[in-house]
Length: 107
Image (cartoon, rainbow, N blue to C red):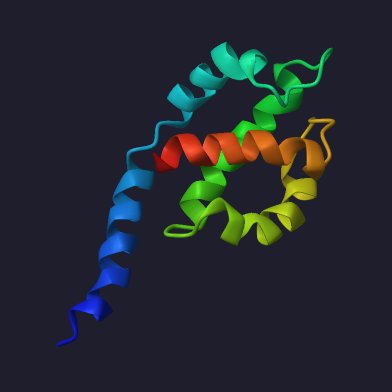
């Protein structure tokens, strides 16, 4: 058997285990404490605007195992309007928070 053909399932399995270990409450607490220090947060905004974007990033990371944020972004951009809840952020504004949440989980 070609060992290269096993890489996909191995990577996908590792990604699935990483997703299973994600604690959404812990992620929410982390971002509540740290969001204001992010360069992309617009002055006058609050966590109610950015929180849904972080939560969306956490959920999306689990829905797209093995994909990078850049690979998943076109789909995420289309999903954001129905997923943003009360957030006032457009995708162009929210994408930075979504990417940050994704990156935190992927490292």
